[in-house]
Picture: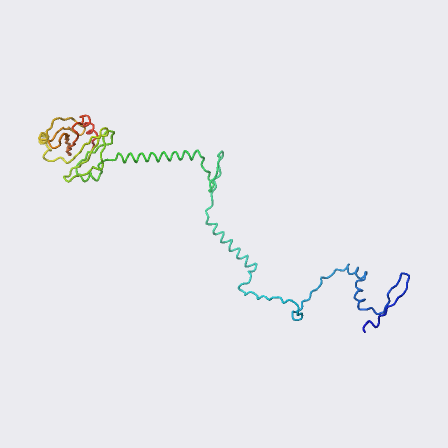
Length: 293
């Protein structure tokens, strides 16, 4: 039976003890273990050893081997870009960024002059004004706004009571009250009545006395002085005084009760002013002094 027929065991006495003896032909086990002898092992250790080689055997030859999954190859259009394609895409992106950056205006940063002290800077590089300058600028702007507001209110308060539209409609020279501290015109009462006369009301500020002013073109029947004097006599003329716009006559028509009327005729305008009978001559003189064309 194989090598067993050629093996025999026995004892051989030697000075060191027993040793096994057998056939001259080594067994398969002896051939296999001979490679681990010291001289051979030492020789193999000095030689470079090659890594073990692994052999792959198909699954059908090994029933218990695990079947590895298979993957389909991606289509050609979904293939990963090559390094050259990536480089070209990067070059295109850089060119586009250069175009965008080229459209952005460059910021000009102002460098300080010699001896100039700069505080905090704005985003554009220009220095922010100091708090003192900001305060003075605010005060200056506030003063300008205040002056404009006061000027506007002054102009609105002192604008003529009789507008240019009414003046052109009247067709004769109009006398208006200039701005003063004694009298004021009720602008809401200024109108031209059905007979073509301009009518408005004046108030005396200290006692709120009311004066009704009526102006019209000089009628033909009173243009001459004798005719005008006859007209004044019919209205019960009783006193007169000189005013800046002409001679003023006090009359007291029967249909105005206790009030009195002052009549003044200029070259082109006939004026009637009706006031309280207790009004002093000084007040009348002041009122006529503020009437201007």
